[in-house]
Length: 582
Image (cartoon, rainbow, N blue to C red; front, side, top):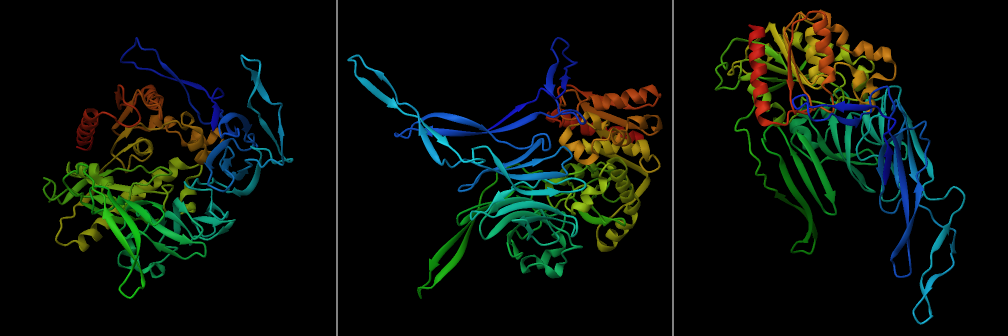
């Protein structure tokens, strides 16, 4: 079990200004460049008497070098094997996979028998306690190093790793910079193919690893793909989260066919496949079972029974008008959403552009999943060409792509959004040529706005502060404007521990440059990106006399958790941008 001491972390206070009689809430927050909580593991050794009743326990602290490796990143315990843990250093550039001794006693020393005297004066034995003895270094809680890994930037955490196979081989994640692929290793040797970016490990057997992958076409070409993907090979790329089975000799086979956002659980002879693609408004779920039967000749025949599991979730009642493309010299994965056929803007020859990115590290928005574009379709039907571009750092394209933002998040992520705007006219002309029957408007590059939330909010504010020649207006929701106010594990992974790097990636000092319309939106109850971020930027804008709009939200956390507020936010942003763009 885990225990922790968070007293080294600074105390932050969240207040409710709308109710001044309510006291501020004090919380510990792992602020970047400050101390982390001290995390510990304890292995509890249980003692049982001859009747198999637990009479007590011995607590054994799990031992590792806490000073060098302060992050406890993963814990795994599979049947028949010692528990294993993954620990990281503060910069996440080095880690260790450690096995925890559960203890095998070499002898048992029994204590004096315990008992009491009953009313007749007879002694009654109740129990006796066995105290185990262990060889040197074998006490429960002591650890041994199984593997160590390093990366000059940072090491990614892959859910489901590290893990033992049932026969005792060790599966670990590897950021293979030489072949630009996030891979898996077995006992230190990489076995997953170059060009299949492993995102998650779902199941481990002696024969294979079940995992979610994304294909990098530049490394793994269509000619090398299995037959099941040949008919739609071009769509199995960074946009598609596919489930595959990979054997330890490197051979593999896909277990999902349609491009989409898929996952799977597997046990025995069955599995459950879950996910959706661009053709499905609702999540699809199927239960698949391998059945062994015998034909009339007595020959064993294997077949699969597939049973769909019903989904009664509501659907939006429309299919978004999405077109995928790749923009610019870096071939940025991009989704373009155009007005629907029944929109009043369906036949316009030219429309303003609304950039709608997340754009930050560790997350993608250009995905083969319909639900990612429902709100983008609403914006398109308000009279925009809506563009979402995944720039450098947004996963799915390999460890080199991810690490292009190291210590330079601000400049690199903005540069990719600017490049996407500049490449948009050519892409829309090509789209019009491919879809002669459809109306494809051209972009009005004098009227380009950006909206976004969280890192997308940071990008939106940054866009009008540092690239006003490209972006005419922006709405920035919950933007992290000062990275020293964000948490340790996320922020320091990308920006390190040099305060000068944080100053370079902040947008507070950019305030005097603002000469475009900017709306800041932030919830007072946000305990992730606190409202201090927007308040500091607004204060800097006021200090230099820069006009802006600030919309504080009472009772709202990092994401808008009130339907009415969410709807009105869309309308307010729409009207703000309509006025700003003329």
